[in-house]
Amino acid sequence: MPVMTTLQDNLQAVQSRIAAACAACGRNPAEVTLLAVSKTFGADAVQDVAACGQQDFGENYIQEGVDKITFLQSAANANKPLIWHCIGPIQSNKTKYVAEFFSWAHTVDRLKIAQRLNDQRPEHLPPLNVCLQVNIDGGATKSGVAPQEVLELAKQVAQLPRLVLRGLMTIPDPVEGFEAQVALHTKSRVLFDEVRAALNRPHFDTLSMGMTSDLEAAIHAGSTMVRVGTAIFGGRQYPA
Ligand SMILES: *Cc1c(COP(=O)(O)O)cnc(C)c1O
Image (cartoon, rainbow, N blue to C red; front, top):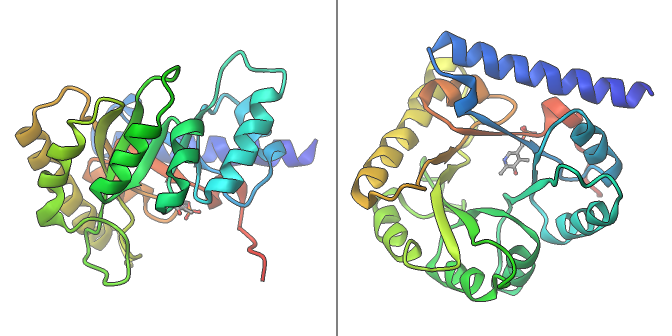
């Protein structure tokens, strides 16, 4: 099965990159979770990567994610359940699907969305893990709460009983060069440390940042969760 071999090789290559990045800055690789971003790829590809031991998967498009989650839940080999992360924008009319199907939402940037997720999280599921998306580099068209407003939002979200506030998430615009990437990610790290100290909550432990092109820099700056799509699944093709 050549496709499977490629996915397995890709996954191992990413795991090696994470291990090397941790070694280079004296971190324990166990501190960094790999989130495999499977958007645009089919449930069969997810299954193949899961068969290599990968447990966390990220989806951007909620309906596409729900379809895959539903399909894979009904598949037989459920001895190690997958953990699904919503990493795409969440509109009000989609919160119900995120609350019912995902374990994590990384892109909460408004109290209204957090409240809806809280109210719609089903009783039989554990609380939904939530990260606040921060617009760390000030891109005008980007989602994410402004850095100076994060702490206030964090305090409000931390009160919601059906959510667990886990940390912060960032998607900075790409910059060239390791040093520049580290400098940008370090801004997120500093903010994360400030919010963590001010909140003083045991579960606030996640800094979701770093993708295929900058995961080394993100790990160097303190990322605890890298979201990697292309390096595992290959290039994405979007419908025209
Ligand atoms: C697509 C996507 C990723 C993965 O990006 P790659 O460059 O393919 O690794 C990570 N995070 C978010 C929010 C994404 O939308």
